[in-house]
Image (cartoon, rainbow, N blue to C red; front, side, top):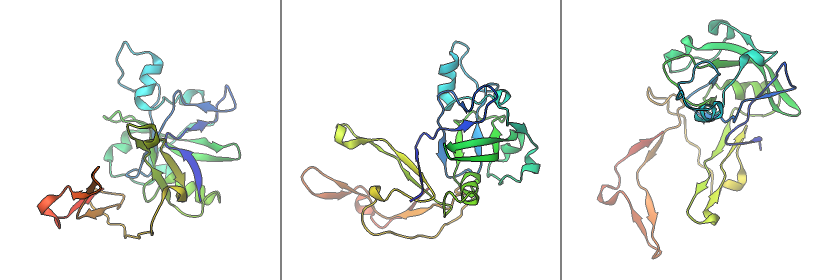
Length: 228
């Protein structure tokens, strides 16, 4: 039901020195507010002067060396036709195209990539917004049938039975992680939530050890807040 991938998705790029270049210690933050994929490279991260290359790399999820990729080509942002982001700083970023290897049988040529050059220094970002370049490319390649994804955050409980890795499924969801009936809700686009994934919450109950359920809203039940 889609392409399974580790939550810390590995990104491979064609390299001139080896069949593929794996970003050092690479992980990408799956982000539903971005449509494009953004990387940190070896030029700009604001790391401590005493940090080793590996320590610096781990702060951002890996560093991309576009100079060692034989298929990297810098390009003007406006010429790429990349989706517009809510963050106006993307125009100041370095843009280009490269070949992204999804697995041993699937690669995406001429995939648009943004290299952070703005004031922020966030982690590498995998854009999974409503106009995601990755999901759109996978649909065009016939690898997935819908521009959708399933994200399981994982468990971080105290006991081992309540600990498990998270997972990201592209083009669908992991049915083993779902119970009960499906609920379909419309996308609600807001100025502070570009992905439209807004849920109105009226109550949250806490399961107590004595078997009872208690509302954490208390007497304010019925009050609504939005969750993004």
